[in-house]
Length: 174
Image: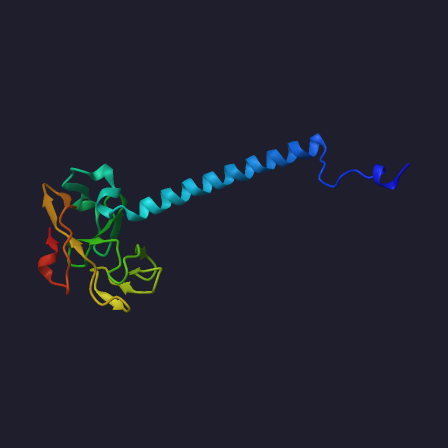
């Protein structure tokens, strides 16, 4: 026997090895397709405007935030469906504030312990009326007009108003 005849060619594969390789190739192709779809979905959601993202409120002008008697002075209530906070100030005035930080647009959270709004991105803080306590934000939170009808607090969610400073006319007295 010749030595050359005894050696198998390097490129020859058993059927089991080729089946395994084909299965792994299909799995990687599936993972790549799912990643591509998720990347496309993420990119398209970033490009949508905030106004068109929340379709459940499309066509709704006012939302009811509760009854006046259910609020205590100093209380802040999140209204997640409208992306805002409703604050009852110490003098029983109400103000509806945007959940969006005026610095770079991050979503704010109300810190009950510290009694202030805190931006998790860059550390801006705002008091209950939306006034800037610590920078980098330079102007107060935007607000929505509030109406009280028959003891029910109604917020006009289609008219967010930009403000440069706090004024009592931005609040609603009971």
